[in-house]
Amino acid sequence: MIKVYSYSRCIACRKALKWLDDHGITYELADIRTDHPDEALLRKLHAMSGLPLQNFWNTGGKPFRDLDLVNRLPAMSEDEQFALLASDGLLVKRPLLVTDSLVLPGFRSGEWGEKLL
Image (cartoon, rainbow, N blue to C red; front, side, top):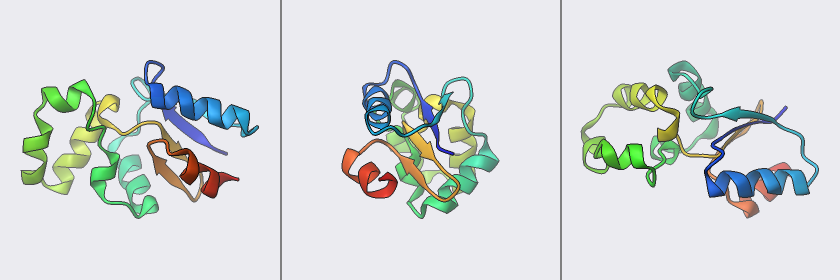
C-alpha cells in the first residue's frame, strides 16, 4: 500500500496526486498538517530512504523561513531536527510518498516513474 502525505494547497502535491491517478496507482492520502508523521516514524522513514536528513525539510515553506532554519539547522543536532520536523507537518518536504520499502520526499515524476512503474 502507498501512503502519500500531502497538503491540499501545495502545487507539487496536486501534481503528484494527479500523476498517481493518471497512472492508475492507488494510494491512501494523509493531510500532512493534521496527520503528519511523528518523530519515531520520521526516524524510520529517514533510515529507509537512505537520504540525508536535509531532504526531509520543506525549505520553501513559510514555517521554515519564519523559524530562520536556513541559519539554525547547521547548528542543530539530528535529535533536535527530528523533534522539530515532528512538531509541524508543514516543515516536512511534501508530498511524502511511503510504501513498505520506499520513501520519496518531494515529487519528481521521473523518479516516481522509475520507482513505482
